[in-house]
Image (cartoon, rainbow, N blue to C red):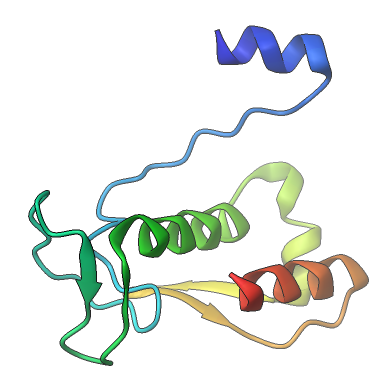
Length: 108
């Protein structure tokens, strides 16, 4: 149904793996157990405290910007976001489009 609606409205649909997005700290990338009943994410490594859904949304946004797709390779030459073993690392931007992405990432 989502594909159909996106085609009708001229939008792109992107599927991302949401695995561990609520278990991974959006600040430092630490992964820890997060039972469903626990609604507040508290990182034992960096001390980040936020709603688990907000933390997950930050991680999903970072994965979206860091995705490796054929049409995204030319834009990623500026190097705003780089995937690391623990998550995503933010670097300086040199292209106008990447500056906009960096600003979105920092506000998130």
